[in-house]
Length: 261
Image (cartoon, rainbow, N blue to C red):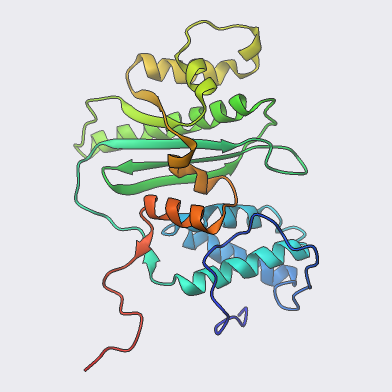
């Protein structure tokens, strides 16, 4: 459909800096084709969290795709071409729930809304992930990170109930890793003041789950923050590092070539 069956492969679905001059694409530049391909890629995200940020970015411009968006779509298709055999494995391990939360503050250059990204592991297996533009403009990086924490806390509460229904009880608080020390301090601080009044509901929601011992928020370095891959464009080495930590890998059962007799 996109006539990219024999295209050159790429090792990164996005780029940290767009080229100054982008030539229009006669095929992908068609808005109808752009919408069809982007819509199809949304289903691929069900097993490929490494492209979740790219697809989320492309989905925000379905109404009027510009040349830079068709350029990013073509990059993504070329990346998928080189990673057709990749996916997320389900491995036998412990059944402890662990989550990672991140946010990219004011990442949208037009609306200045932030991007939320979080993921959850059951043992060593990735079971849940989300990329979403926040609905309101955050006035600080701490606020954007805290809104991401609140969204992940709600997801953790649902996962814990679901696991309990399956007979997998979570006896300990779920460890939630965040790389913003101010957001962690705010979550653990029982004192509520005027500077946090505009996020009062999120503040009380997270605090309640901490007090109920459903979650425990722990610091993590930005380097080790797995959810970073869900919130922004990354350099290729950084992208590959986090993709490995996200457990996206080539299926060992795939051949990738012609079988020898």
